[in-house]
Amino acid sequence: MSLENKIDFAVILSVKHANPNGDPLNGNRPRVDYEGYGEISDVCLKRKIRDRLQDNQQPIFVQCDEKKIDGLPSLKARAESEEFGLGKDTFNSKKTSPGKAAELACAKWLDVRTFGQLFAFKGSGKDGVSIPIRGPVSIHSAFSVEPVSVASIQITKSVSGEGDGSKKGSDTMGMKHRVDEAVYVTYGSMNPQLSERTGFTNNDAETIKSVLPKLFEGDASSARPEGSMAVEKVIWWQHNCKSGQYSSAKVHRTLTVHPDGSFELEKLEGLEPEIIEGF
Image (cartoon, rainbow, N blue to C red; front, side, top):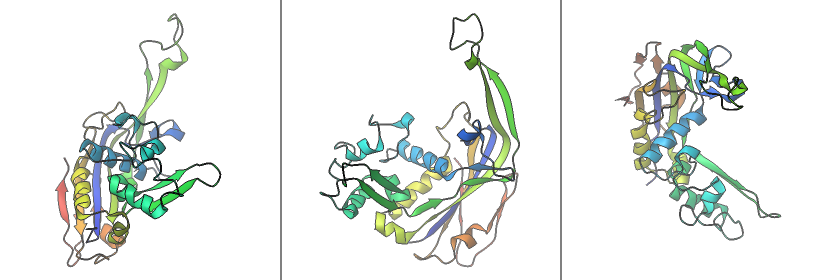
């Protein structure tokens, strides 16, 4: 059964001496907007969710290179793989209708029926296929509660990666950037009407809910050392109907997050939020 009740949620994140989401077009400095507020893109957050789902043995279509479990080189290869996907004829418009292909993809992969996916594959002549799937779960970029201060340090390798070792190579010097301390918040929603199209269920919603509190577990790197990023709170609003008792905008605006990570919630009649501790 598809999702029965509209759901809104918010996630409060803390960052300490870490680069939460580097911008490759700006020397991998932490992302900030024009007013200096830190940003973690929605794409980055979806990647964390996918990785945590994959850690829980859930079938994921968009796998990152570091966590591939099938060794397949591309999304096209995964989609057409008999063992891990749906077969090479699934996305051949002459043999499978786009609607049927979308249905099969949603049934196979949790992230497809959650976030949606665009299957756009080239073919010979007019045999190319483009199948857009709109997912019921949307998530905003996370923004810091107040402007962030970005610290940059120069780093030097102790061993040159090129040359004969008699002098320092050009690759021995570099920069690392970090946010010393900040609190971020992101919001999301789950739409029952769209879930009817992808087959996203109440159980799927509970699965997403279970990984949100541990979004950064097992995600350590040089830019994000273990323990430097954490989910502090997840706020979960489950409406009593498909259309929702209130708009998502009104629900999200009831949450006020302070720079120290504390928060306040305005009450909405008939809609009681669930507060979940971070992992």
